[in-house]
Length: 206
Image (cartoon, rainbow, N blue to C red; front, side, top):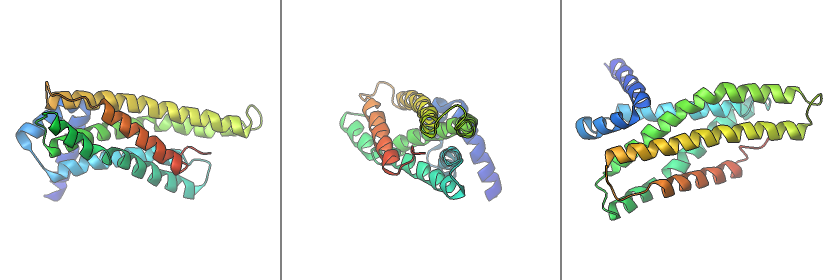
């Protein structure tokens, strides 16, 4: 029974990744709260950040691979979780009818999609993290190689981040059409908190 429920939950996650706006609207209006679905969405986001974080430690040893996988997941999760209550409160004050669970659902759908995008970016970072340092000292100095790898990671994070911003905005608009709200400040806050956390834990140092 539990296996079937878990299997159907991950099938629903597939639907959420293909059509996030429709998925969020259906679960909010028709199905409501179902913990196993929310768990599956969260696990998808965690899996994506964990796998990508592992590639950020390539060449630094097994301990660094495990550490960066954990740090990326924790920091990304905190960056979304910390300002989320403020988004709900300010939206409510602005006249939004979204429930707290609906706001959380929009964030979970977005981060789940972002986790999948991070998984898709794993081969890119893996290739450059292995190929560029291998050219030291033939083509690059160690400093130049580190800067190139850093640039690749920043491009990946920027691309995924912009896509997640657009997706979150569309999901929120679908859940609360015509609502007097603008989630851009929230997304900017997520990016700021995330960047500060990444810097503090040394995630982008090679």
